[in-house]
Length: 488
Image 1 (cartoon, rainbow, N blue to C red):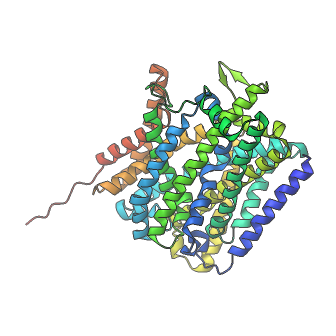
Image 2 (tube, rainbow, N blue to C red):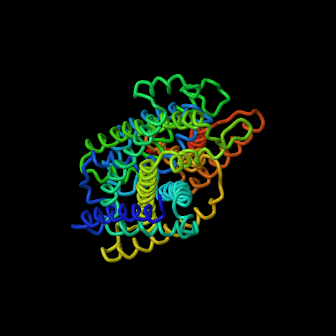
């Protein structure tokens, strides 16, 4: 396809998002950007969260990672299902009872202002890096597939994408995102199915033959029982559970959509449905990964390797799609990248804006006109931070999804520890020491992880979030307030 044709596709897709934005930006209140007027249909929210939960990172990293790690990621998927049960039946009732806009308001109610600010700050750092890394991979793909042909530098591509997202979200925020993300989730799932069918047809398989071939592939290994491996079943399952609780249940960008649903019962349905949807989509990604490497082997397509491992696994799906899957495959993949980019980044930017506005600037106490001014300034600042992080990590290599989950282990671990302590104990804390305890837990987790890997070749994997959360709880218990006993 020519660069002009690809440009027209992008413009047409963006025009569709603008139409949705226009239709959803009516009847706004001064808080609509943040809470969507609390009237979103729960099934729409659940389906739309697929796009936010997957992103371009999952789109290329999960299938690509099959080349080196077989189907071990499925163990993580099983853990995510358990994690969504915890969110639906433990966290959602708490959030609705408190009627929060920022989920970190729970920490204020439970532990006080300092802990509240600490939790929100950890989220801001986590989400900024996580969203920026997802955006980075998306821009890499768009550069490779489109913008390099027009000699547009990557820094300008990043700015263009951020401006496009701003154009359709700056008025109604989360209210618009609920609808645009549902649209983008539909495109994302459709594209994955198209890619699988394209490979099946190219290899001359019937549907039954395709399934039989996948099952008998050497890469069809689902469970890893090696205790030293980072993909060990227990490490993956527990990590999937904890990371889901942290990256969905304690993540403003994900829970903000759930909190736009009017009733608690429907919000629970939303979380459980989303858990099923995302597990199904990620399982499709794994099947696609097996087919991709099979396709490359049967057609003699060389893929970069080093020391017996595939390198640049995030590039395998884009490379095969743009060079071997024909026009339909190319168009579908481009739409998937755009959809997953917008669906994941728009929610993150809105969540960062909401969290900073409510948690640090006390947005709820401002008059309506002041809210609009502050929101606009914070939104601009968030976009600038996003741009800087992407530029800093531009030359990073490897599977970005692994990098994101590792960073999440260090930054969401303290959040997870604070919430578990707050939910299941009556402990009161000496607030001034909470930031020290949380930072210390994250630093010690990192040092311990590095030591175990270098000294004993023991890969903690994504379990660093468990270690971090446990250390956080331990350190917080060390700074608990002594109970005050009544004197006669």
